[in-house]
Image (tube, rainbow, N blue to C red; front, top):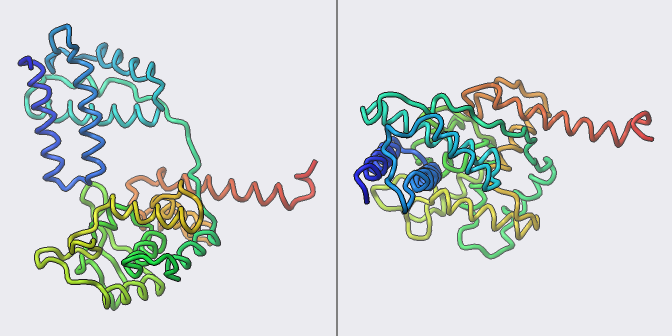
Length: 305
């Protein structure tokens, strides 16, 4: 390993170590690690000297982006990889490894605006009710139902769900303290269905390790990981709905879309979801407009040819 290559890799390792200490989600750490490994490999060809961090400028970064486009990667994937590299360069600038941040000057590829696929209220409630019916002979049905009630009833991200502790619940007022992206905390209310599922689960919950106050625990008595929770959601979606594409974020989309459809204020939904910018929440208005157009096309005589 050359000295210059070592500089870049050591910087990436220190950067990832800092993210871990800041409690970044395992999903984020995996993506950043993979994206930065590929970035470093690109600038470490086997038949030439590796580029030092200070030798990578705007032109070199644009060539790297061009190579990503040549691989026919989606704009969303390229944007994610560029975000990881920008964060690394910002870290190296703060640490004095480089004297300027060329990644800041590279234009971000535009991503197509996609309306998220959202199950209807009837489909979502049918799925959650079927989970509660406990017909699949699962080892922890009460826990699994609580997962669905919190994902759909509170709009939580899967990492937020996995990170919940017992003391995060105000069971008398029905509020949850949720730790979201960037270590930001917010208060989220939960309804009677989630409250019932919570009480049932806590009555049956096996004792966890004394040092672990995690709400959701696995069969080893330790905190259920976000990957484990994802697997549970995928299992029920496949077995009950026959839809393997449904994932935890689909329930978050459903939560926001159904709130908006029933008249909830967009800014209130923004607060409930923990979005930093209102523009992120506004994508759900596109979903509602799409639904309205479908209703118009089906029902209005002037819509028919």
